[in-house]
Image 1 (cartoon, rainbow, N blue to C red):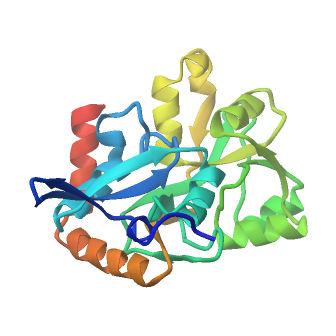
Image 2: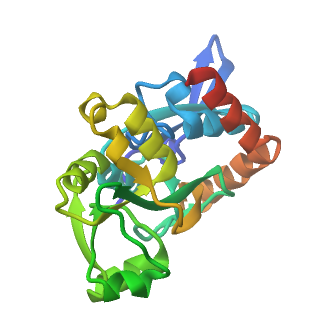
Length: 251
């Protein structure tokens, strides 16, 4: 059961000064997933920048709490101070959420070790080769990949994060790792642990899917109203232009 008063249940805080409304804010959860979302990055990352701009355009100020991914989802569901979590490839991680219009996209595919490259034509080909694929615990991939992994046709080994998977890949403990292309590029450019071995890691030319990213609102009357309001703000933005400018200016 979502706790708190009716006022916080709708996730809106009214800041008052001598009886005048100064600001209206909503609080969201996200994860540490640079360059899309990160407390260490300007504006909280590229996707956070888009989300904040869309909300600001309809008179809402976004407050963002960065949490471990599974907790970010759970807190958005059970803690009434939060109205949504992001960025999700979908909003079906748990029941009770409804998706916004897309807030961006991310090419999802495989990181591979250039010293032991692999080839594949389709996901069945991966299963036929009995390859071991690294994934991140709690993350969804593509529907087809997750279905085949769930049946055991594709052998997966879960890790706590992308860096752990890249370590395994360099040590040849896995054959490939599912990862977002921009996340891999960011890690190779900024992760000191990978500085000497970055030349041995690359994103496979064949992507699994260019994934759309969503803001996932609590699926109740107030959440749906906020979703609709957010979508109106989002429609005013050129998302790709904002993201491109973000990377040009910040990296």
